[in-house]
Image (cartoon, rainbow, N blue to C red; front, top):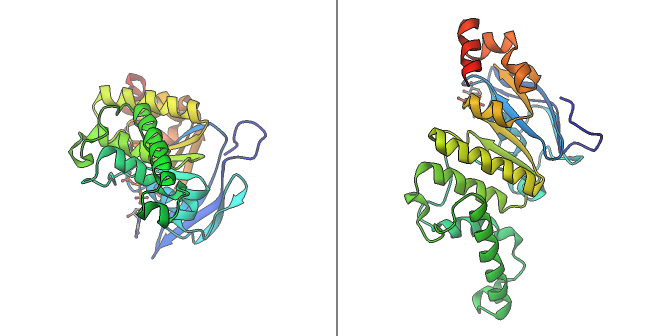
Length: 271
Ligand SMILES: Nc1ncnc2c1ncn2[C@@H]1O[C@H](COP(=O)(O)OP(=O)(O)OP(=O)(O)O)[C@@H](O)[C@H]1O
């Protein structure tokens, strides 16, 4: 997958694959994502999309291939090292500290950035308070970006589903990433919430100049927001292209939804 421009791609994936027993969940996966690009990763259930995320965040160890972040080889690194290097993600099944406040959820994602030591934390020194204040301000800014201003003190688990998904995005932003992986961010959202999410993703990409890789079943969102789309089926890449190319690709139409061509084309046009 060729990235736009001549600069080193933010993410470069070469022949990445993993086998679970006899199943090749992801096979020879290749992809490049350039700076500030917004790329979609789609495919039917079980196609291998989340497995790709798990591979490039160090959750799974690839059985073949390599991947690079800004030219730095990332194979074999632990998840926290990959997060520190600049890859952040959200999860299909939301992972928040449900009993913690909204703002503490964001602040806890920034912990690795803290420079004060145990002494300052235990004795609550001026150094501690200064850094805490800066952290709180930053967390508030991030909550504003995901339209959660005013919700700082709510318990995260009590937020409606759509807001919890946006809080996950704020947590990911708190890690100062270069590449943001979003796993079905619109799942469970109504059309108004999805529209709001779309605006937020655009804003984040433009504001932070980050690259985004998006797994999403909501085709209208994918078609509207992604500059390029990669389609997986049974762990294999079956198509790469612009939203328009993907919507008209017969292999995608046949494999992706498993419907008759006319039916899928009608769906794609109505979205
Ligand atoms: N840890 C694992 N052990 C064994 N098989 C696994 C494991 N993780 C994923 N798989 C299998 O790998 C395949 C790809 O799964 P994956 O979750 O990546 O698909 P997906 O495209 O994200 O699907 P969905 O859209 O339903 O989330 C599936 O057949 C799945 O059962």
